[in-house]
Image (tube, rainbow, N blue to C red; front, side, top):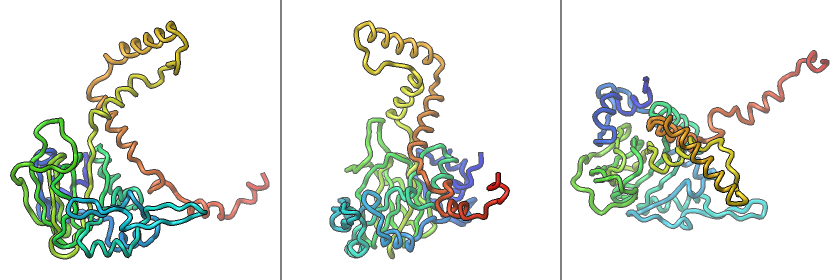
Length: 321
């Protein structure tokens, strides 16, 4: 299987999947090995400026944080009134710049929702990895730290765009009963390195990490690669076993309720022996991919194409017919 996009990020994909995936953090620098060119950044600070100033970017797609604590949205957003309806949470460019100057970190969530080039990137990686991929963009002033030591419920590939950032990655969870969020202690550092423009860091799922802005204004794109969990497996099991089963919504008496129970058991007896763990996991991953799909970006020909089609000269013969 060709993994052209992943190759741009990590070089030798077989070596990455065998030696690092889910097991060990790593830094990949362009110009070394098969990672000669490195990945292309789909989003620039100028595009961020345009999005923030455009008037439509709002919470929860953007957030500011400082020293591990979120900044209240009222400090960097304002309300807008349209057709008599006032809606809060729209980005205020002036307030955002002020907070950045004071040491806050700007976080743009799910950039793939509104930026076509980023959506194209996440789509390519989704096709190569078979996992849902989301994109986050961070802007951090020198010496600032937006988030404390924490774990993410995803594998992370991040690309440094501008400035530099000092990263520390510690160990992963000791067992399966863990959750994302801040951690007080995660053992000794497994990796401590400074990322500069064009360099890539991989953090395995659940491995604790933190970062501090270095020289210049640090910006980086963070791609979170989501894995299906037990909740998704359970939902897929329900779909695979029960889809198309004509169960009554509210049986009227004991006889009807008993018949519904028999119908359920018969379906389970028929389908469970045919179902494999591989098929269940594949269904859960595909369902998670479909859940993250963003309509209207890339494939849709759009309004301009519709206008061009409607404005095109018509065939007189077709009109006569």
